[in-house]
Amino acid sequence: MIQLLTVVSRREIAKGATELICRRPDATAIEPGRFMHLRVGPLLRRPISIANVEGDLITFLFKEIGQGTKELARLRAGDQIDALGPLGNGFPVEHVAREAKIVLVGGGIGVPPLYYTMRRLVERGIACEAILGFDTADSVFYEAEFRKLGPTTVTTVDGTAGIAGFVTAALDSSRFDTLFACGPEPMLRSIQQVPVEHKFLSIENRMGCGIGACFACVCPTPDGHYVKTCSDGPVFRAEEVIL
Ligand code: FES
Image: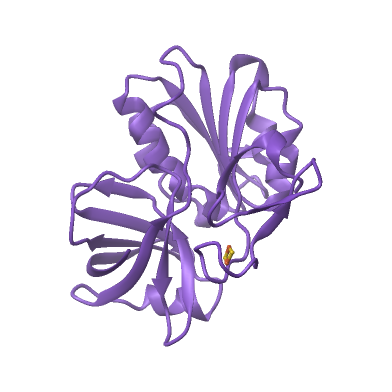
C-alpha cells in the first residue's frame, strides 16, 4: 500500500494553496473522496485528499497550514513522495441514481475531493451543481475547473467574490435530493440540518496512523459508539456521526 509518487508539477493556485500533480506507479481506478497519507518527515505523515485522478496522474490540492504541508509545497518536479494509500472510503458515486439531483458543497480545503467527485458523476452522465465556499477572493481556487463540469456558485465570507456569506447562503435545498459535502466542522454541522434526503459528509479529523490503528481520529455516533474517520470514513452519511 506504500508507493513512491514522482512530482510532475507544482504550482500555487491561490493564496497559500498548492496544486501538486504526481505520477504513480500504476493507473488503477480510485474512488473519489479517498485520501493518501503522505510522508512529510522521518516519522510524520499528513492525510491529503485526492483532488483528481487521470490515468497514472494524481492531483493533490492543499493549504499550507503547518510544517508538514509547507514541506509538501516546497517539492519540485522530479522529487519523490512516499505515499500510503489510497485510504478510507469515499463518496458513493457509483451508487447514486442517474436521475438524482446532486449538489456538491465544499468549504475551503474541503473543496479538492469534490472536484474529482463531480468529474466522476458527470462522466456517469449525472448532472450536478457545486457550491464552493472560501474566506476571500484571493483564496478561491479551481472555480474555472468546476465550471467546466457544471453550474458552480462561489461564496466568500467577506463578500469579495461571489455571494457574500457561507455556503448555506447559496444553497436552495428544495432543488436537490442528494448532497455531498466536505469542509470544516462548523460547515458540516450546518449541512447536517439542511433538509436534503441523502447527505454524505467527508470529515476532516486530525489523524495519526491513517489506517485504523491509533484511535486519533474517532468521531462519536448517535447510538453511543465511535467511528474512525480514517478507516470507516472519511465519508459518512450525515445521520451517522455527531459533529
Ligand atoms: Fe489512527 Fe484513524 S488515524 S485510527
